[in-house]
Image 1 (tube, rainbow, N blue to C red):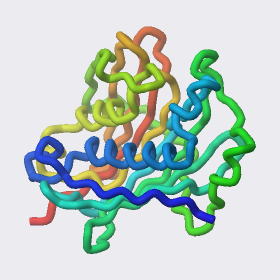
Image 2 (tube, rainbow, N blue to C red):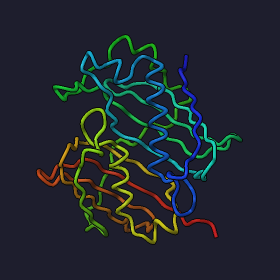
Image 3 (tube, rainbow, N blue to C red):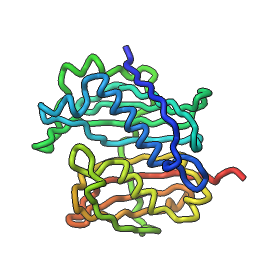
Image 4 (spheres, rainbow, N blue to C red):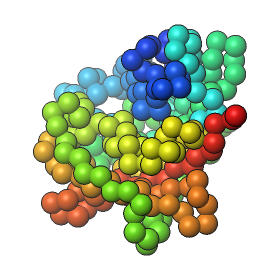
Length: 250
């Protein structure tokens, strides 16, 4: 049996860009809200796990964006668990408009973390019945992201502040994703659209951490970029990512 959550959302004015279409980080935030609502339904949310000092942590996510909805558009987000592999659990997302047109999709992998010991835990047996098998699941996220050994075309520094933190006490994944996209050239952001993105979270970043975000152009494909987020105090990688872009029609 597949447990599916279906949520309806309307794109608000503060969520749109200069093209009057939803900003990518805001669409990702909506998808994140749908998964939180689903875990609440399943009694597997961070609040349900709080007494056991457990919480879910996103490891990696692979997005495909087909068409970005505009201001006032009602969108429907479906999300469901799609199997597990040892300590990893998988979750898929499908985003459509009210007419059923596919707007975006994503596959993701999650771990269960002990919030005090900061170590990975095994999935409790009671969750196995609600973790669906992989029948009709989206393709699994990538195994890893190999960053080319080329100098970055853009590098930008960020400092984690209080409002970047989530319920786990580390930087929210949507903020890291936004940092990555903000390093892209203005020409690309204004005249091209993101059609694919993968992001792999490797380390936590916490309050006052200073991060360096680097974007590296693929030498074989001018619209493909690789990204690296590094914690400056110890040079540890916080995240790696890739993005693919295409020109807006017309």
